Image (cartoon, rainbow, N blue to C red):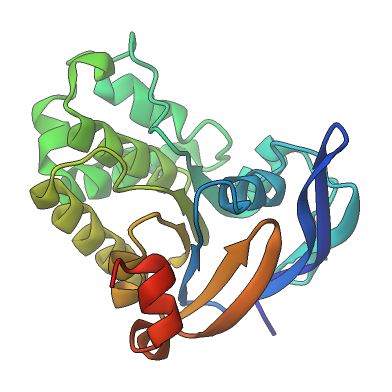
Length: 236
């Protein structure tokens, strides 16, 4: 059974239809990429899954439970964490305070310090800067903070929106290595990424979105070799 199942999902912004009946699945332990051009509906898909915007039709199921109308904070409690586009860190708070906020839905308060140690182990720079205001970090460090904040909720699945946006090539490589490590530790990943080449290189499967519709799906390694995908999304 799929960990996440989306069926016939429709989303509107006023009279404009952003998602036109998309359906897809993410299995436990997978890295699944959503690729497509700007305006295709990728970010809207993640916002709909995590309860940030309403869904007009269709349903979303997580671990066999309907979450179509579940509020965002309850979805976090159920095990889905969202790393948003543009990082969205709390710039006036310290790195430490940002991370602790990531655990606000947890009931196992006594174990939060242990999770924090694991996050610091994965992101040593965050520990070095734990008392620094988040707004003073570099873009790459803020992306690490956004990912660390998501991991503080002990998620079963992380959805990530454009983690490489605005980063230098060195930071991009580092961020994608961390995504692979998170996946290897057993966390399922749904990845939206403009850098389709990079996304497909670490994904198990992928879906291609165009103007609110899924037009192609399959194994990521096969998509990397697909001439039509190369021309449309990989800059070849």
